[in-house]
Image (cartoon, rainbow, N blue to C red; front, side, top):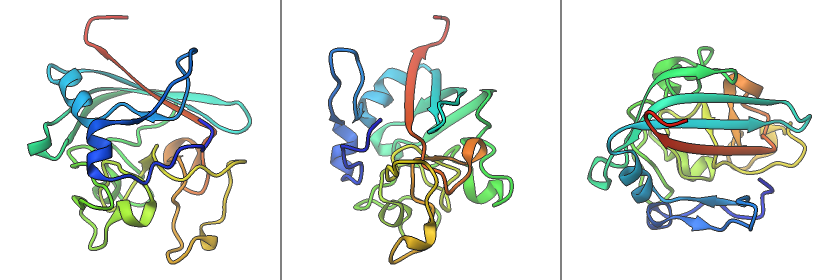
Length: 188
């Protein structure tokens, strides 16, 4: 929402959750993977709301479930609908779905690598996420004010490590605000 909170956290931090909300329900936070697992055990709807720096919004909705800790908090997603493009299942067609789809991926942090890349995506990209090899979406990336940034300025790797949803604004554009909302099936 504003970049005030560092999302480059440990497995335990992501498990328990971190950050806080103001009285309007806004803020920088992660609910916690254990809570996400418990809330989605029977399946639910995930709505991802994205906003760029020009005020343009888009959304993506999925049926989703987060596995248990023993399952690595694996991401199960299906049934994309929306205006943002399908970053979680289809990934980045340009980079290859097999490398960028997040469906079925276990959660990774810098201290617990579960991605398919020979290096650690979470360590390189700077946030915990359901990385593949590595990403088409990373809502826990580095917050770059203004949107566009030059990956060549990132050291030691020249990588797209912003708050990204590739089908919406590309890999080298860090979004102004993102929200992940969940609700059980059958409710509006």
